[in-house]
Length: 334
Image 1: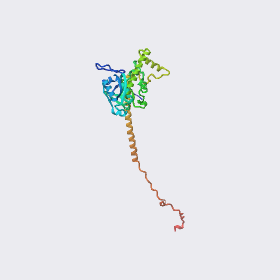
Image 2: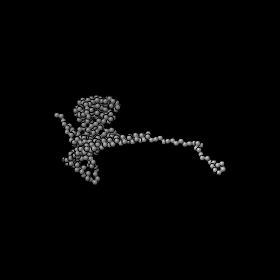
Image 3: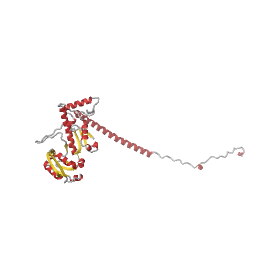
Image 4: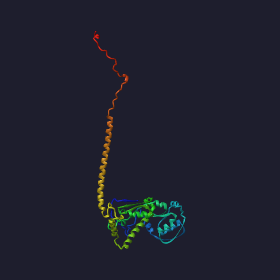
């Protein structure tokens, strides 16, 4: 899954400063925590001759260590996981090949890999290598923004999709793995968390895309490939059946990001003020509800108890006499 962070814009170019006597830094080279030592970097590009015929694995690694001038260690637990003995015979006959290629040819059938660390190479099993993700920052400004300041690939979505479809498909999060690609607007780069071997393949794919742009410029006899790309984007924008080469309207042109940052800051302050007001009103509402509940409880306490009226028994009620009253006569007076 492509993750996007668009918080601030620091510029389209980054200055690289080299120490006296050192070659300038390659601006396309990935950046990582704990950069490899010069000896390890040199070893990865070293070309050697290999002549092994049923040579024990540990002896073959010792020969490569002397040829490359670096330390190579066989990890015992990894050998056990891969069910490989250090005396396992290996064979390889080749001339003028990269040290990295020699490692692949020797170790691939044994399900082992060479893990290049800052100052040493450790031979580990393939499953351990897949579980060991590292974070590297891959600069891609030249692949998503053309020299005219227009977006070729907003958020690097298409470029990320190419990587996930062509480089170690099973390691990426959308394909069931745990490796991730995040596009970060600061520096316009991919922050990638993936196995080391996968990073190397990603770098290779990005370099291939860069070379293809150069070849396209020569093929079309266009010195300014950026202007051509911008023209294609504009034509696609105005086409009745666009293929989506252009940035959506809500996505800012690269040249306008600075101005949008100021607006975003103002919007953020407004949002903070609104949130503070909402918090205050919420507190007042809770207090009001509490007071209403207290009034209800007090009303229950002050309500008079209902008076009980005794009902007499039927036999206790005096009833009027039913005898007729004698009519008074004149004889009654004597």
